[in-house]
Image (cartoon, rainbow, N blue to C red; front, side, top):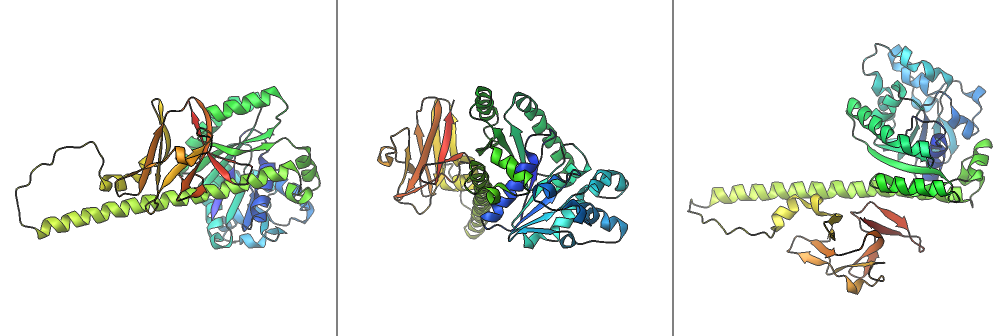
Length: 404
């Protein structure tokens, strides 16, 4: 179960809108999704047409129940919004949470403990956090595997983003929690010069953290909220629905990339362990002989590559060259097609390094933004080790590299 906290100290950045519509889009894509409102203003309930007067118990009651020795299950307070989307609503009582939990051990882990009890029932949990650094925010971060920071494309938002990320880093360190942080450009109005310049600055300074998806300014999104509906339900043909659907796909895709990395790292560790064990057995089996030091070589050996695979993969700029490295142990050929070679893979073949399954090539590219895809044994696909992607006209993703 992935838990995504939507965080920003600044109000008016579309935080609750992003939480509601991302949760709804994930549910549309078949993911079992829980939306948890940790904001005392209880805007998630308003945005999903849950009558405030009918909310008898909220997430507040669940969080403090164990400290009162009267445990309440999360399932007792949930509202079903759609087939795969449920809401744990907030209430104004949340504003007293910090005071009520004074002196309670591990009070920052209340939400994490509550969510651990429903771990097998959901694919995604989206947490709408309050616009302040508080015990509620600590709880969200302790429970989170990922953080999304929605940023309005205005001057003051850009000015404060660095401090926001710095604050998040401090909070995560204090919580002893590692999370993946992504910055989402929201309320983007392409018609204004300032918005375009701010977005360009965001992508320049925070490229490694930016989502490829941008949520555009859209009056339909505001209308949907006023009617208590997600944009996908209110206007399925709107640009806002497309934006949040693409964001949901990107969130799901980032999980797949993370899993691939973990698998690769695990395999590399196993290879190193097996290699070490084999060396020990060999040394124990053979008689002692005088060994001759082999001449040094600059070419890395397959075992070395296997032990450090994760350091090689992806695309990196080294001096004036761009180096592409990927892993396809069973491939007969790996090529690159991109707008730098007129999308002709035959012009850019990657070279296989020994027997390790690693393929690489080096290109000289002028500064700029380039889109490309890998062609593995004739099959076109995005680079699995490059997180920067954008949607192409065929409904698939191109990998992106920015040369400086």
